[in-house]
Length: 546
Image 1 (spheres, helix red, strand yellow):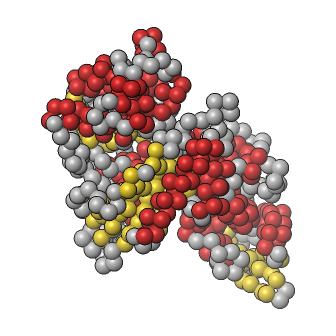
Image 2: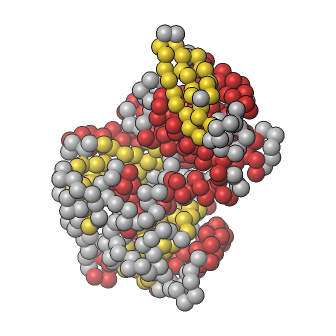
């Protein structure tokens, strides 16, 4: 592992609009990737406002070296990752980081034992690692790049080549126009498509064709979002592109600029390097100054991905940005904690916007769903501290489930709650981790019919004990909320929860919107739905119309 904490590279603070706060804060952000585990230590200075990277950690652990028989993360790779993560924790503790945020990407997403590995990390290290989707990874990469570059309202394409996937993002400094994640990465391609050393002409040609085919859809979608006459500038992030830029600079300038931020690589120079690298065996690549052993193994596959992207986009050069996913995690955290305003207008509402967009996609009756969400949040707020102790994060998950609970009607009325689970689970909601999406999907799935049971596959997918408890304690509130708008006409105007501890009872007072409306169907539905509430909380529920 490389420890550059003692003498970090010089980096100018990035100016960000903020709300006043005079306290400097230290935050650690970890990216558990397919090839490497990276950590950055950031000093957040809200009064300027700015954040500066003051330290970096990196370990090449190769989680993407899957077991060939099972496709699972290998025991050796997981052990290497545990050592690296423990080291990251030690460094974060030594600088008094107030929080360590960790995300996992492609390799852990796809491995059958990925969730079990995350549970091992939590059990042994007490570190919660958030698994994020490809689209969410792309969104946070966009945030990270924008924290280090000014797009001046002009279109830019961000290319992030990882070990297991390549992210392509089109944006102009505001809401991203496209976010894509494609399963072509330097480690994945090398493991699955390269068996000769140096690579044979037939394997080289097959690899080129495969990359072109895999990237075609994402690039076509990206090009469809360009306005007539626009020629976007390409921005490269990640170790593969940085290595290629450094190799080229070392050869042409005799030195590698530090930092690499802003350095360019032309398509012509890239093609020259690809042609040279394809003729070298591993020993010859290792002899190239600046090419480490681990990078030498996978550099050709990574370079071919970049060459294909630049060729298809007709880009003559690409510029380096050293900020990416890890810095995006920091920006996302700062926005969530009110340390910066919505410089990017979509940031603060990305979750809400993504949920509403998904609801519209599946033709959800939004007026009904929004009433259900209001009731669910009212129940959540009024029972907080009495029946549960969940906070703002869980409140958002309940809201999202309420908005999307009927999305399954898009497939069919019968068992629509199960269809809702499937549609939500595969909707790639932005701003949420994979386990949060799993929680939303389960909450929606249990808004009717049977309660959560261990034999249900959907419930077993909640590998986090904490998120299982969220579902167990909040799904009864969603059921009551659905019952309160049974006729979907807004018959109930407001509700009040009154508690009687002896005996344990909660009276649910309903105020009708129309004074003469007896709300008979809503009261009947509450009687039917209240069993899960009473059994879950050990408290009698008495609905009363007032």
